[in-house]
Amino acid sequence: MLLSARLELLLSLPQSVWVIVASAKGSTPRDVGASMIVTPDQVFDTIGGGHLELKAIEFAREQLANERCEATVRHFPLGPSLGQCCGGHTSLLFAPCGKEKRAMLEAMRVQAAQGEAVAFSTSLDTGEPISVPLANDAWHIAIFGAGHVGKALVNVLANLPCQITWIDAREAEFPAMLPHNVTALASDDPASEVSRLPANSQVLVLTHSHAIDLEICFALLKRDDFAYCGLIGSHTKAATFRRRFEQRAVPDAAIARIICPIGSISSAAEHRKHPGVIAISVAADLVARRGASAKQNSSATP
Image 1 (cartoon, rainbow, N blue to C red):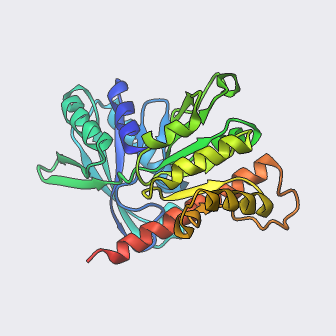
Image 2 (cartoon, rainbow, N blue to C red; image 1 turned 180 degrees about the horizontal axis):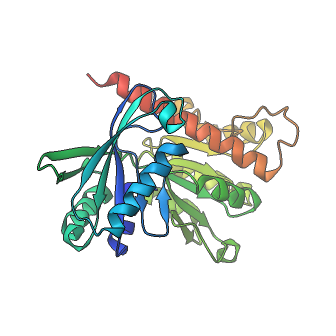
């Protein structure tokens, strides 16, 4: 769940405890800033599962039952006592989020929606201040096409911490119910929606029409700020589109930005044309590319 969506959820809940990884040393399930929301009868997101998460949920619900308002930190060695073999140490911040926190949460929600750095800052039950930076690396994926592959992709990608814009000219193709992080957009001219997409988006082009795919790709090539541009199709389709690009005098460097075929599974793999296989293949590729980009950006930071 994206940070802005998580904050919106917190604002909508009458009772909840925000459990945030405040420190992580050695091998731990999640890094600092990862979090989950606990209510008396529900849990949203995860801090890594296992016995650690069960203990955290149990303690958070004790806070709710006792109507505790103060935030507190608990330390957990991830060894035999917790039935976990990670071997590291993690500290969890338990922050009850009642009415008294609404103004702070709303301010944080606005920061997160604007892509700013966000930290959860409060006073602990010991009187000490604490501030934990929260992960707010917006991940936006645009999917052009609501056919079988588009539907399979949304089913897979909706489980990731990303925001999806799903675009098709055929409004009837969209399901009646959509995951919380998916926005369906019916457009008579899908290519015109390219200019409205956020920078650093990962874009997938897989409509029912080669002609529509081509116009979307031309629109994409007019921008140079996307993280990924993928076109579904075979090597033959890639060659045909390349000729079309060259006819319009598109530079080779720009053409190379359109990836076709898409996905990480070899074209020789069995069942490679099944929508579900394509969806898993593409999702794995997007996650790997995103991870590589984050590592590259981190190593480039002085």
